[in-house]
Length: 152
Image (cartoon, rainbow, N blue to C red; front, side, top):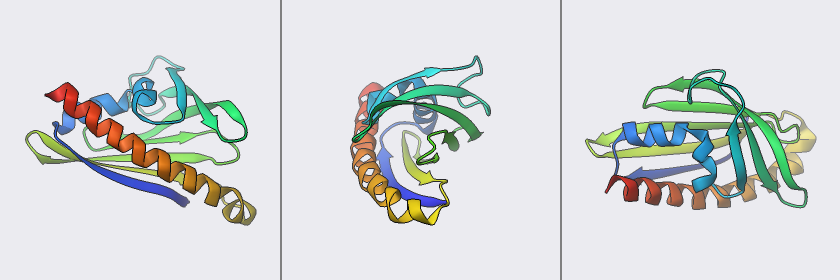
């Protein structure tokens, strides 16, 4: 896999609250830039392995695209991993949660590409890395602000 970006936020809110909010991916667009809409595509609970979503994202120079997202791993209050079916990128999102105090946590957010071709690694992925770094930085600040305001 190819790491596109990684970002960490220390948040003044209990890890349980952060995990519950973040794992409801229908809320992803509230804090992550470029997500136009996201909706459940099956009846499984959020963070259940096999839970699917249909995400509409803004892709530079291509406009809005719909992507199927599937939860592939989850551990309560610790981890959420999803994989998307965007052929040009084959994204994998990993979010780790760590309790740092009774009312504080650290969230580590990473985005990878599962695309293995050398051509992608020298053409598309460096551009995707620049875009995702900017979006992740903004998104993690928004997430921290949202969780801290809701927890106050």
